[in-house]
Image (cartoon, rainbow, N blue to C red; front, top):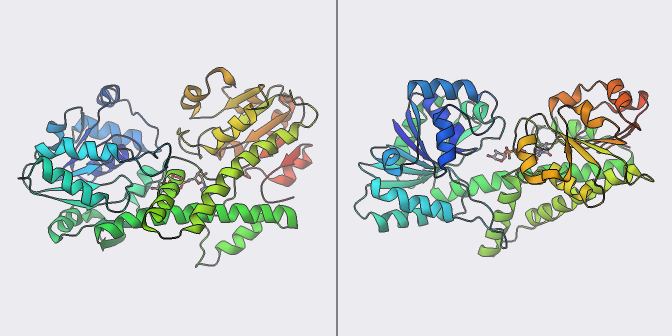
Length: 433
Ligand code: UDX
């Protein structure tokens, strides 16, 4: 099939690459010339595990192309996917749909032959109706249907998740459109669950899922706080809970609070939708407020570790919003760092993948190191903010000899508390005394 994908970000690019690997002819379109030039010259614009090889393969085969020209991408396409950003509105926090609507308007004139327009971006309930109306207005003769096709890819694991989805949700009100997408996703038949639902249910599934996962993280974080006070060990508690198949063991890792480009945005948008429809979503409202509070509290926890040396150097390990990605947008690490920077100016940071992105946001407010040990040079406190696998294997003796005082605040519970303490470190982690 010929597929056009509008938007080449963390959703559009991995989806395009995945669909090319399934044997489709994929054209990705974006407005940012720099991005398109980079992609056409073989430079991936985001980091995703396992992406590089497939990207190069399909670029070389021309089964994956990149263009600035909407007409070129959309003409003759069987499916056009909208994968543009839906950032939160700065004041109301509801999803800002201007890029979705602009894309619908721009693609409409070029639809020819029956086309399915599928929304991959996370959009509020009812957006499909709007997109349908915009296209109809611009091109009354177009033969098309608008479908919700929510994306559940995790950043850092997008390629893996594309090929191993837990489910494929197709929100189509019309059988003809549904059949086109069933054919596109044919290779997954028998391997995963297909959910054929109406468009509004599909739009809701995406928000309800992300809000639930955010609540699950908030819950385990609250339990961690409880464990610290009551003397229990959150690792044991989480394992005990997770073994109940009704609860499930995933997303029970306590930490500094959730972040990233999805959970904060989607929980806020869901809460806003609840208010709009007059449906109380108290759990979600509380989750949002408490998650924000938590990040500020975690910053304070780091500063407390400096005690009577407020000028002491702090080494921050990890800036990405989670391990496996170079993305710092809405990163809890960055928020905690900003909290620290309100008081301390003596901070050195290290992240194996996200340093370039972080530099754009932090500038010269911090110094940058090429390794964890270089960051720890002369530091009073080392803080682990992102769960990069390499932090689990830190050479503690080497770290200690680089530092001026041996103290670690581990907000991702990466290290073995007993071992760290036995090597002479003061150690603070989450959910254990
Ligand atoms: C999320 C959803 O998982 C994905 O299905 C959706 O399509 C996009 O949003 P992503 O934002 O890539 O994916 O990250 P995810 O792995 O879900 O983590 C989100 C945040 O929660 C991170 O800050 C992470 O560190 C935190 N988290 C996650 C925890 O603190 N504890 C956990 O147990 C899991």
